[in-house]
Length: 320
Image 1 (cartoon, rainbow, N blue to C red):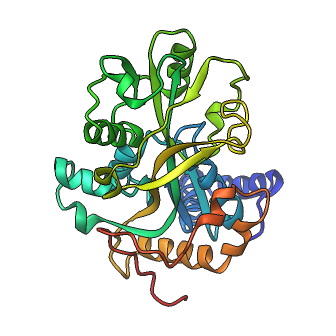
Image 2: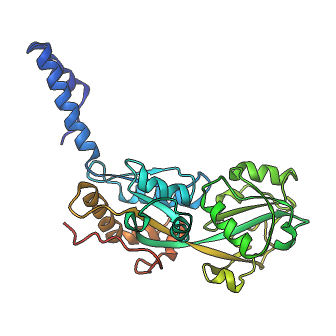
């Protein structure tokens, strides 16, 4: 459809007015209704994460690669973590897709957060693994040193808060928990007001980019115990990831959790199902574009065929 300019709109308005006030009102209402339908016919909303996290950068890549205007409009939105994203997928209008941690569905089942959650949420693909970053002051050398200390785990309902509670419990660490946003927690950590801060994000996380060498902060190793390996994967943070925080040529042991592109389980044949199916087909067809700069390096870890235990894959059907 050709783009309307001011002159054509003015001409339409004058013609409608010439036909009388009632005709003018009807003309504008019909025109706006048609434009609204056109603008929304291909809209897919994606709930991501905070401004400094990996989720929003992945969602921005999806928007930049797949957006085709009215045919497919991909809208990336800042989110508040995995637990809230899961709720938003189920409850908020206009949200079809969300990026969440793979352990959030089991957490939602255990806590009975939403009725019928297994029938309401599926997944499109596993994306990549997210590392658990435990940043602390110099006097904290191991996770055992966190006992009785204030440890920030991000805002309530976030994926970091959820995973932190599971990991600290598995390691037997009884810390005082704070729920500040990550940027506030980093300031408090620098000022010595808290002992450590946990952040679950794909490395390298932009949150730490502004920390200068000699800051007095460092990453604390998280041991991959047998109990943790039942849910998480062993991983490392290296000097290549964080040259200002990790000495050259060395690594810090940690664990990782998978990130998942989750989706509302729309019924086949519905308009929202067709929108998501169109998105999935475009994502699969153009996946190679995500592997090239300037896209996030985490895309190179994605295996489209990977299964996510405990989840059901969304079936888009054959391309239309």
